[in-house]
Length: 546
Image 1 (tube, rainbow, N blue to C red):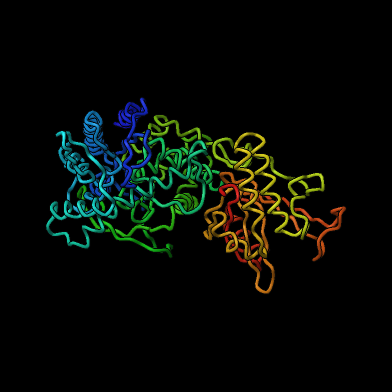
Image 2 (image 1 turned 180 degrees about the vertical axis):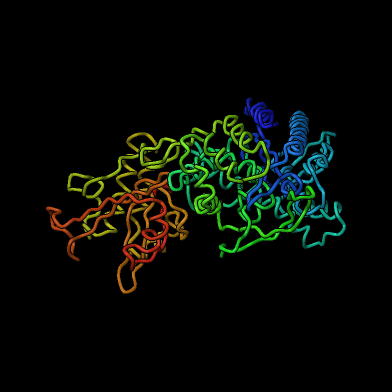
């Protein structure tokens, strides 16, 4: 296998933190100071390179090695062209090149790594540049506007395949930008949080297109770890299988259906399906055929369904999959029960786990997990009701004891603690507090009232520690609570309210307080969307981002 070489290649490219020059006019050139050379595995990875059995897949070793060699050569060409442009002081973005490669491989039949030559990389890079000749004879290069670059890309794609319509080529040019923006939006959202921490929610496969191996593992690790805690499939096994089955999340099936493991539709599947050409082995050997595959709303759904597939099939239970005490035992049991026909499948999975140290994720998660969490370590989680000695709760005296009063003051208390430990400046704390206390609204109206003042979201999957969650109630005021912590498998929330409808007296005797820790499944399936059963989720407000 070529995975060791591919990993070392990325490390070599990144070791000096060489810069990708940023374009001032074209937003597709971002993140000066971070060179990330990415190999994109395209949709034909699933055609001719995989074996199928019982709705699952493995790879053909010989073809996989040949494919990996072609990918490695692609990296070498990309690095060489980057160095060439860097020496000539010309802007160059490897994200543009890899995104263009992905688009071409999806639309131009048979387009492969070998087709993306050094000359083609130069041609694509130049599509984003304007050459300017000065009076003294010197020549400089400036970035095109996004509109001009898209026009150039559209014309280039039309020249690649005359059967493509104008509208298709325009869509392809937009896709190049979208793939880069999806990657940048995700990675920028992780800045300042250490390793990428994503365990549940609405992750879409497009973020994988421009990811390195390390970024992929850091993104998928918490998802696999949370699934391990719920379903008992070792996180390392899930990770390694996802790497091989989905081509690091970049395969055509994964990109179009969020399907990480090639699981097909079946009689007991009531979700959406997608038809794709795939390779299988039968009595007469290898052949191509069309098959219906399961389509998922998110990567998390795919990971969960993969584990449920194993749990609900008695063959895997009988083989000892869920009695295994090591990842080696478990993948061998999965393989022996009929998962994949490749005779080396189990050893290949084990090799991938050892190569990328994936077994570090084989730790059931809890509130003290140090692999992926937010909240704990940044601020002290409140476990008791506030009193008059808690200064943050004295800033606002009206409606003392009501849920809005509590959530607002609790968020401010966290802001003050962050300023005290140096996480934010005093000026930032003052600004955050002023914005927070400028909002006046009933609990159920807080998202709308906060819009334009603080960041908000109405997507239940945008769960984040430090946020205020709001619910509406027909005929009532609604409710709000403060999200203290989000881990790989749990959510901790605190809330306060008054015993009576009036504000508390000076002795604060009527304040009720509750701290609740629940699983992510419990939060997403009941507590979050339907607080106490008759409150409906309204949205999140993020005072720590204000």
